[in-house]
Length: 264
Image (cartoon, rainbow, N blue to C red; front, top):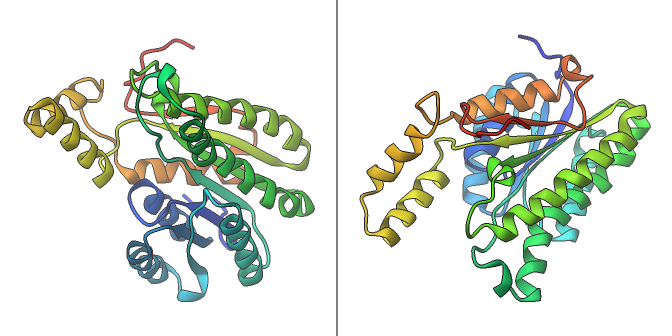
């Protein structure tokens, strides 16, 4: 399906590996120009080569950056404008936060979680919105885990900071709708990535159990009885960035094989 993304310009955060990489590849396959950024330069360069094979080196810009740092955000946006002359799509990819009990976090730990999971996408949006308004077209898509919809023990900071982003995104979508700019959140469940595998292996080690058992339990809790594929998330994000999804805004779209058990 041609999504009409040819020559659009997308910035994809956390795009050197896993889901972020799959999103960047989905845009490149549609003919978009893509800026990829991540902290690990070696992985970033490998993804840059993959994207260049789909189009050309001219259609991809790789920038080592920490998107929890305001000056790095400004540099990514500035370099993207200098290279491509426009910005139409922003995809933020949130990290996680320190686990622990709600009553035991100090101010610095809470502030760090908010910087990574809330202020980073807020700052990114603030930088790109003026360009989107000028061209009267834009797409802002935040990628979050489905845990934001669940009260999971130990995940207080991650859930709290991500809920803050959901509220901000809804209000931002209302403000930007008259400019043909949409703002949506994609909530992804368990997806087969190196990060998920490492997380389950760590949990298994701490519990003194085989990692295979946790993987089987995770899969069994998904009605489709399998983990998601990064490419499936990439395809959904590419669709949301297209004109075909132009009437979808202020929404939280779940992609988790039916795992989230909620009626709201």
